[in-house]
Image (tube, rainbow over all chains, first blue to last red; front, side, top):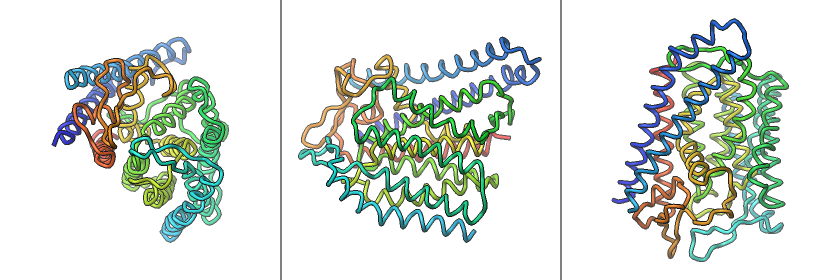
Length: 77
Length: 325
């Protein structure tokens, strides 16, 4: 029963991560990537946009990790 | 269709027939690893990788022979062979420095770049294909160490690598069939056959481990298939449990470290039962999360991890159907 509860909790965490991923790609799809499509080819501008994209993805992973850490700490306390 | 059936059967039969031979070779050459979750800690041969490599590469080569040359397939074969070779060196010589290993695995991405087997326009949810001309080759190289290590780090319980990889390639197969992608369909059919054959020996209680050669090979095939098939997003979603496991370990350990460098183990094993280590400094892993505050059997944990992978497979297919143009 307890393993089932833990599995369900991880399933919820996965769902949150998936919804977060879809949300982030939705935001990037209507902000960063259209801008990238119409860029004039400037390398600095291109790299800056890519850096923003990577930063957003890293933020997604870090948010996911923080949520997991909080849940695990609560479970093990 | 006949070719597809032929390569499926070939891959399945080769892995089923070769694995017992490689189990004997592993014992004879002392290429074994301790099954630490069992009370008696038996030595299990870690020579499952070469059987997977032979089964998959032979089947793909037969496909090329019958259907004709394909640059994409050749790039995939070379990439996965390079990753398998790095894993084999690690299996034979011992653990490679965890900071050097990602650098070595970058080499696995070179055949894809050298043979131009990629399209720098990944298909993203909501907008479809987008231009990433400058950064995409860099992402190709980085993706090999990331995914190979993620697959490697989920291979901690009997059968976990087989079942989690089966769900990944099922997702790839479903999406490829929906869109009519030829190469990802062939690769996933061949991989599914090999993994089903391998799972017979790798499931709880394991008679053979995939070893680093097997896990890095599977990881490289996953990346190559995603790049060649332009199904990167589907691959990311299908790999969510792997990403969760790997990223949480890296974040909680504050960098790339060997398991031997952990001051505190993620789990505690008592009489064959697994429980999460309550120490706050212990790395956060999927097994630690699943065994929090309980004592679980290894096979039950494998079922839970497989369920998580199955769920990610469904999410990956749903993402493709609902949000991809």
